[in-house]
Image (cartoon, rainbow, N blue to C red; front, side, top):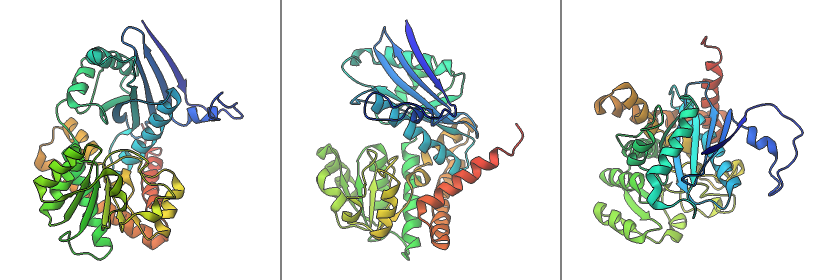
Length: 365
């Protein structure tokens, strides 16, 4: 037996506040569709957020992690889905933005993972193809293959997009350093927060370019292993944000920089693979005031979704590689536009995405 509650998008005004945390009900209607999923047989609790489908079906990963409560899960799913709308639009892809989260708590037994994923896939199937799930924090290619046995279409069921995400971030970092007058990455100090699949591959690419790489991870052994492989340096996770460096590259959790920490960063450039790196919009202003060049995360970390599109189109790696490297060109163009228009890189990148979304409305269906 399953139970589903779906809240459709609509311009409702004057709504009452939710009974806890003072969150306005209209926050639940910020996107096109919000689906809260519960499967009694497996204990699945999940949220699917479809933010925008003007450009095509909503593409976004499935995040599996513990949350302090259902409201936190809903908030994160919607926030990340909105970020995917911007990411896919700025990258010029025929995708909308979506995201989903599976609440991994005591009710979700590890031995039932496959059953839980299939139950989740059944909820995805009910959306009729408007949401295409992919990998994210806490899920794997193998997990998406399980979801794909039930859902009509999934991404990342056969290949891991992480190396392509890393390649795009690497290209974006090169563009940011060039924007500041650098010729290449030789001798540039890059501090990477997170030594997972993306962070480790980014570290390798940077080291090949002659950069001095400092790595940190919540698993110190993993950070030391990555550093040893590339001839870099490992530091404690709590130190990485204050390390003196040219580039700070968050490649793990979201909201790592806020208005307080922006002024204490030891870098000149903030450019990494993590989604939703800034706590809020005020943080972008604080970074500019601190003299830190912020490369918007949704602009630089789109290599994975480019790879997803390539896989759907049947491209080989030779066809895909220049498309991912073009992320560097987009980063350069956005940074130049921001400087010319005297706006933040975040505002310039958002303008790029919103132009494409607006232009899509003028195209006959």
